[in-house]
Image (tube, rainbow, N blue to C red; front, side):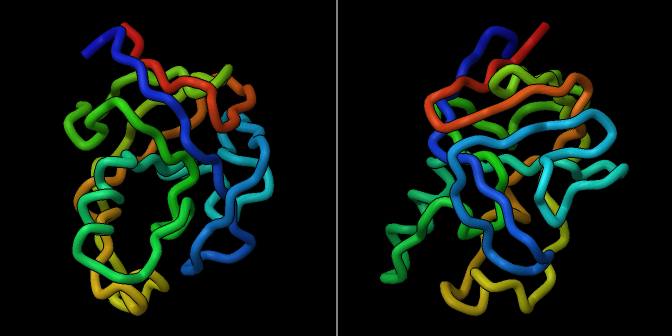
Length: 148
């Protein structure tokens, strides 16, 4: 999968855990921290969350609720890579930052905002999580590149 590239469709943050994120113009990714200003930042293994636009599109076909960027509490919404197929340990260049995949999917708490509204959440099945190895910035239009 090395060399594969995706386009970032949105970068999103939230002030509280358990709520949907909202798109912002740009995010700053810091090593051992994650995204500055995001509730999920901290020195742990899920500093940055990524979700493929394709995953959102599949659910959008089944629900009438309009699914907007950040609806699944993802930090990075991108198009062009099957994220859930990347192995743990994969290095990703996200904008100018370097990250490493640490987890595929997650246990979903049943009361998350999108599950209450749409009846389903794709993040537990198809979202991925990463830590920040080298700081940088990312914005919509930048790329996510799978590194060697």
